[in-house]
Image 1 (cartoon, protein in one colour):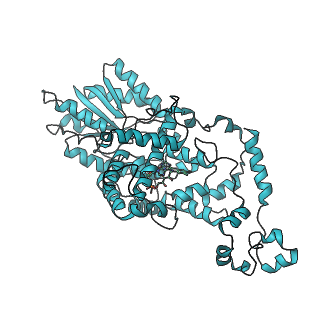
Image 2: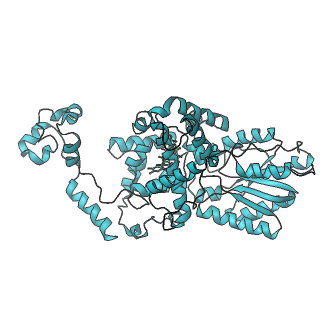
Image 3: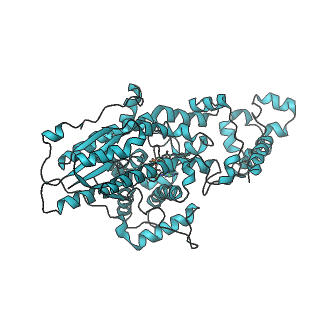
Length: 482
Ligand code: FAD
């Protein structure tokens, strides 16, 4: 009677509830010939159908190598199995359970619709083979679905969710305590029987190869392993978090934690992150140091989008959160889309963001917000931190189709914004010297207020779109589906 731990997006030893539970069952048995085994499925068809980026697969493989070393120290063998067709996952798992005489199968829950469906099938086949299955909540600090509004409904808006999240965790801080380190198997079980199985983590998967140049960049920016990830977190809390509130929005500054690839693949848990932040904040969560509280609130966005996914699973099915928005008439110009993907739109800030995505498989949050309106799949297929809940949530927010999204009618008018936030025109004069001799009334909209010959003398381009007209078109399209 052995236990099997099925690793997925939880490639860590520490704070891994499922792994710890599996090891506890074996440890507490008086019979010492029982073992914990671990398995990881290489499932390219499933990955392709979910637009998993090749760089993310490469990141998984690098982290699996590190995980295997840590499991070796616990005498737990990690089996690597290939599954060609996604629909074969349940039968492959059951075969392994039979081969290894498994009585209990453990995994941490993945909340996306297809993953839940797959796990339900595994659960059913296992149960009919008298194998007990335990699927545990470990991706979020607060289990998705637990927090409800006064009316008993799931939260649709971030701020009340966040307030309720803080109240809940502050009322029982033990929620932040990590699951203990798993117990080791009493002896190494690398006998001749196991030698026949594959334990080797491949270096690449056909169809998911990355160029050597990209490999170099991602290995430099995002090294593998739990140990590295924890040192990154400690350094962030020590050196950067105090300035986080402001620095996080400055594109040229490396002011955020860069932990997203590690959180998305479960190299570290959200709970470990918040716990360390809580300690650095003198045992405070929602109050205390500004930077830390702000950072914890970002992790709560991650929790928010996961609870949205669980309560409103239609967002997994190519549907906007606000269902009526599905009929919005988007511009589907292939050429413009291609130029956007390549970072050749002619809008420098958009292009810089897209080139960062293509060049290092990661993009600054502020740039993600600026470039985003339509293109979720392109993001997913390039991001090393590709994460369905966060990516879908972020895209729907920017496109005004999501939960707690920016309202569709909030289309900035550049002239009034300019008059409001640069009233004397000093900022414009500094950056657009052709306009420096204009007075504070003319400077915000020279094309609109100057006569033709005066404007021509400036040597300054005409606006590429008529803002009023472009705004009306966009609003009409949103209103049509309201
Ligand atoms: P930090 O600022 O250090 O934040 C710490 C952690 O909090 C992040 O690692 C992340 O897990 C979480 N977090 C931060 N901001 C958000 C947010 N807005 N929503 C949800 N969680 C957040 N994040 C992903 O992990 N994967 C994605 O695929 C993804 N796609 C996005 C698409 C769009 C259009 C937008 C606007 C945002 C997207 N985000 C995504 C959220 C955010 O941009 C990244 O999490 C963040 O830039 C990662 O950098 P960091 O780890 O340095 O963040």
